[in-house]
Length: 290
Length: 340
Image (cartoon, rainbow over all chains, first blue to last red; front, side, top):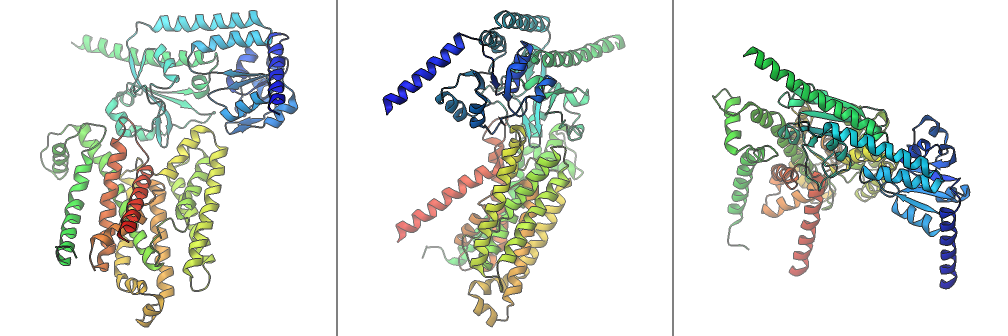
């Protein structure tokens, strides 16, 4: 019995490898919003036969059938759709789901979202799997160059201490352990919660007060803002509140592992520039007063 | 018998309770993210009452606007839940009774979670509290209506378990359907925390806890009669049915108010009355006030732990109380088995 299983498994693997190396994937299931975005970017959006709940960009993505979300994936539906490539999301899909799809002999690629450089790498890999090598490489190059440009421009700027309010009730921060922090670092932002062992800790108003951030970055979640800014107005002791440096930025531009993250990054850099500019203006004003 | 006489021990417990009651809040206020010494706290209070103090303004505001409301809310929660536990253990004559017996906590969690999930995080604190309150009221009504004629204790306990499961499944479903960010925020209601404390939202918990304490104390004599059995109590002229239902409703009101402002904090209501009964010798009439004081002080220190264990971050209070509660139980069990 075991031998039969092994042979079956091996042959499935073989078929998968042949499909992968041989003909480009035509029926793709993309199990994350960022994979959908990247496929559309490479011009392969119409090859996606199914995706998950929150894949909402670009607009055409909304018409793709859904087969699951954060809580799991309907594997039977995946089988019925007969895909030749499944782009799974290692940090977003359930591990059991990914493993089961692999056991079933499906051609599964595990997308990882841990550093910005991986975005370029994934564009190249997706291009190869879809037979769009040139497009993939070009997109990756564009991404890398734009990222480098942003980093270069900001490199020598003064660091800005920021608080990233991920959620307001309970108050939750994005800390230095999260990969999102690298987006902020590119703009010379310094997280006031700088412990690299924490990613999204629950914090108190007092924690924020003590850390005295110069800027608040507040992401919106799926279109809804959860600001609760009134709570902070009481605390002008916080430089960000005193100088009104609270910046709302579309959460999808900061939390989604796609090329659009550079749009988010540019907005963050712009916000930090405003913080620096105000400080500069104050200094000038003080000087002229003297 | 220990070398101490009973009355000396009781007196010692009373003095310890009083000292803890006075000094715990003051000490607890000097713990937190910002570096504020006990001296600063003292000066701030002195300054508040018109004295001249040189504490810097931000420290003063942290003490007065963030830490004091929080310590008071922690005290109220601990006191209220322990009080409610002590009363419930008495009227049901069940040592395992606690404020969450009737699914009050799961009802409240479900209500709050439903409001957050349907209205979104923009939902005001008032509507979340309202949702928590409605949820707990529903669970109490369900349990009491299922308790049968004369409010039979066994039926009520079983109904409580069923109602608890019913609401928990509802909460799980809402959690399952919401996205991870929202789910993390909903967990607050299940694990409990005092981060929301502010002077504005202290009014209701203070009022309800104080009123309940006085009513419970006023009825402490007939309550003790119930401990000796329904028939005995009836013989002494106690209206057992009415007293029981009244006390049940009152403790649910108390619990619901507290859950609505600080989430579900387990084990305190169960644990503290037991400890207080062990500390006091032959003085069951002081169990209620003792539970309130020791429960409140206990919770103040649990919250200090919650703030201090991790730097720059907070632990849910319910996690700590549950860990302590279960350890306490294991210890009691072990002592019992070695004694026998």
